[in-house]
Length: 244
Length: 244
DNA sequence: TCATTGAATTGACAATAGTCAAGGCAGATA
DNA sequence: TATCTGCCTTGACTATTGTCAATTCAATGA
Image (tube, rainbow over all chains, first blue to last red):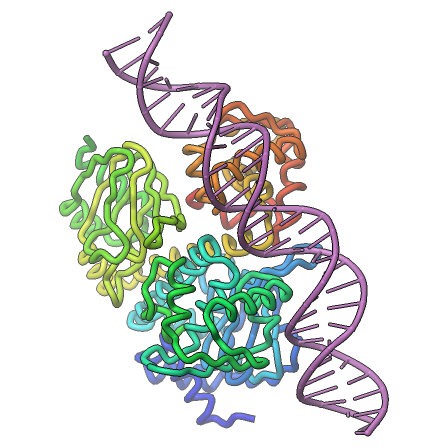
């Protein structure tokens, strides 16, 4: 169970809050509620009234939408120290997606009204939110590009590259941040397709796959394979510190 | 050639500028430059220094990225009275995509520095920009959903539905806003796939296709076909007044 | 009216990804 | 250690989309 200091630290860690008013942050901290959730627990569903924002302290939260027959589209997977639920501060005030913990996770929730007030009264915070929205938008644009141009294996390669500390030289080991099934849905493909595409990637680039751990002697091989079908050049600066 | 009044009107028509300071808008108008561009003319390319924002007065502008081998991914197609190029007001200040007129078009360009100043000095404008960014983000999320869940025919149907005045009852006629090839790329498919998928849609829903004009007696038929593979219910409010 | 041009369609085929069913594997539990 | 469970993989097959080449169509201008 996180204490006051950890809550304050978590709020402070959120990109757009970093430079914001201390008073605002302490007010947020005062109203924070800690949540411990089990794997599979649903935090809210698409079209629910949006009254809270969430910060992930540990674990992962999947944002997704689904059709009546249960087919899911994963929008994003939120890692530690990131926020979600803030998309609809304006207008409709309903969540545009559902949120589900993909493993046992700790979260804090904050009244969305506080954030709304903060944005309206502190221009610096509004600018920071705007900047973070713009960043997210770029990421989504890139996502659409990837799904249009890259095939399954290339998307996996690209995903792996984004897990690497990009300044790294020489041999690299990566550990997948979450289940392969979840990675697959994050990349917009079926688990079976993921499995086969990973094997294809292995054959093409000589990476070494052992369970969730992937090792390679030469990152450049992977770069050549995946970044050939991408408009950006490796390393993709703007994706460096992003959510996975 | 548009006159001062038309320029002012165009600036006024941009969603986030509507409620903004009059002085800001007149300063923008004073610095506006009118551009007449031919079909195929490139306004800027991905990674160019972002010093201007653009407003479309007439015609269409395609935003896209491409890989070294020329494969394109269309990010968006900007209609009349919409703005583009504002994605990178912060940080890097480079355009994250290329822009090309898809037919003879009239545009105005404005120094991005003015918008930046405006946002930093007028909190109301910052809020309006934030709101418009959030809206755009939702649209992109929906776009990702569609590409994940819907097949080619369903995406076309969904596109058509968004062209309809959604309150309309009874028989409807639609005219495609631009070339089929461009619609295809907007929906992330090849022209050949578009052609075949449209035919399939026709067989499935009884729509009547004559060139770029599409007629149907019953919108509901199309709704049943396309919206079955979408998390949203028709009419999709949040897409109503959006760019196509 | 004819020729030209680019858009759109069509056919034949290849590549890619999805579906369904059957096992295999590894970590958790008793 | 044995068993259970859920994740992952594999095989066989289907569906969907992409690619390449050949026409067809329609708008345009000489």
